[in-house]
Length: 422
Image (cartoon, rainbow, N blue to C red; front, side):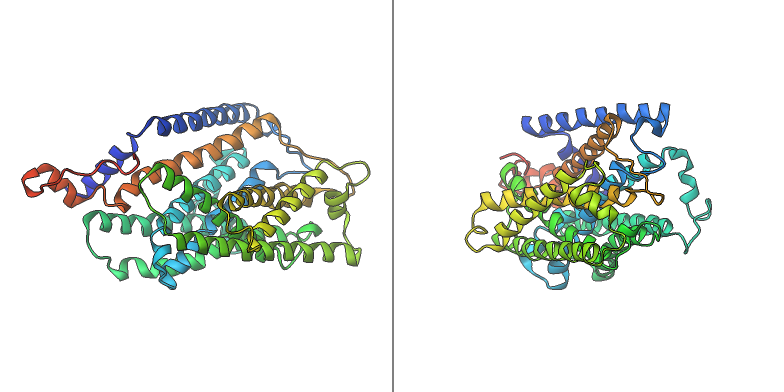
């Protein structure tokens, strides 16, 4: 049989079998996906009126999640740089997890953009040569280019490496190294362009800051490795994939540095907003409430508390040696930065309006359903990718092992069990 075809057959066979906990996890995610589909079908029938979006606050939960998840996708570069540029062996062994994570995140990004459009049939306007992209003036056009480019890079690089690993053949540097270096630049560009979408809007003073892009990148490089840190522990628990201790240490150092920088940038933003006293209404609304309106105020202070506690845990020599505390810190950072960078950053930019109206926003039931459905889709895809990839990485399946299974006289040992099952 053709090796390439067998490669796909073996991966699919790994995906469709597993222990009960694997099916239970996919079943739970499927329920949330169906819930999201039901919510989105209602939105398609009735229009964006099913959401809480208004003319005054036109970006809400969808764009907030999009902004946050773009950072998760970009954060894969924190594994790529030490693995391929600094050639740290421990990171090379886990970099594939980061690339699968980035691939899943990009899919979620595209889904959030699709549901926010309201009329997905109009997406053809964003297609090169077919639609009118208004390139290079439109920052949205740049966002479309960098997101889809990053998606292609994350399909090619790990795909090529996995196929060569499956065949047990050496890598040809020309086929992957240039793309690795490009992906480092591209990962930074996807979140930088996203930041430019906001700080380039002159009518929104809350976003008019030169450090929006660095702040986005730093927060992404904190929360992305936190997600991967937790994921690696779960992967070790439910599979035979072994993570080097050094990989955990490097991830923890990255999170420790970036969490401190994230707090520094927040302090810089607060100083800029309140010390000058100019155009501070949006910041006042966010941090202290404005004219009796304070929907986001308790959330942003909760986010700051979470981020401070997470920073203390990761920066303390006493605390960062305890896995339980590190896991708690990672969870607090994930939630805290989601609030601060998502709802806190995006929604606040619209309040008050340029004419002084205060129209508050909170997600509708439909928006919550759709958001949960897209997040579940991302985790579903990430799970399937890991289920297919880990057996190749651990050497459980491969072209040569398949040949031995067909001709058992060539080997005295039976093939090992699937790597996902202990």
